[in-house]
Image 1: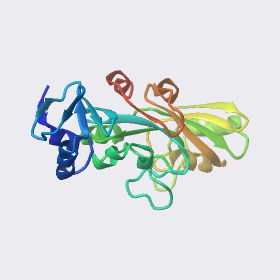
Image 2: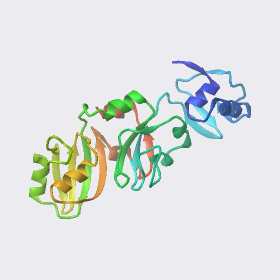
Image 3: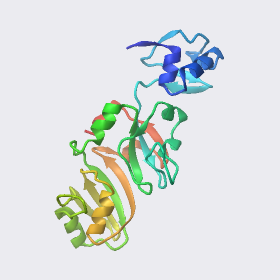
Image 4: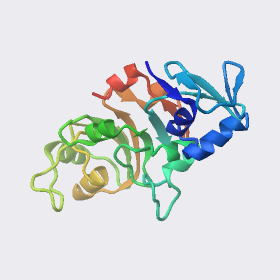
Length: 236
């Protein structure tokens, strides 16, 4: 539990510079428990704090941990070059507090994308030493054969990789559908593995990270949600 001045709280939540946050408070745009706040020096307990800013409710979070159901044609970059960035799908406050993707999905890949402003969390989740399985649903250009599944399970050699990369599991889900589980997280790995095995990935969707599934989050494409402690534990 901690107390912070109201202007510091608003700044930490991504409402803008300290100067701008002070003006919001002095203009009467911040309400707590039904009381309009006008003194930016007022100290407030952050635990369980719910702010009302511009008539919109905002729950205080020391750090943000969210999952986004990423649509196609969005880039996982704070400085996108060819497509809109995934941050445009989130409240503007998240950009101010420097929320960023945990790892990346290609612009045309859909599904679960973790995002946070907690540097150690991002580093830990992105570390190749973690070996957290990630489940993908791949649509292939050519039909899925038993030989293709066997190749992906045995391992395929990719350019610039010292050793063959293999799927943890690989299951045929339809004539042109594969469910493939990886733990390495190499650049364009699913697409490159399918190409090395003689097929082509025409669509890719990430449905789970660790034991956390996108289906359990119940968020539509383009939507996001905060992750609870219990859900974060499923990422281990």
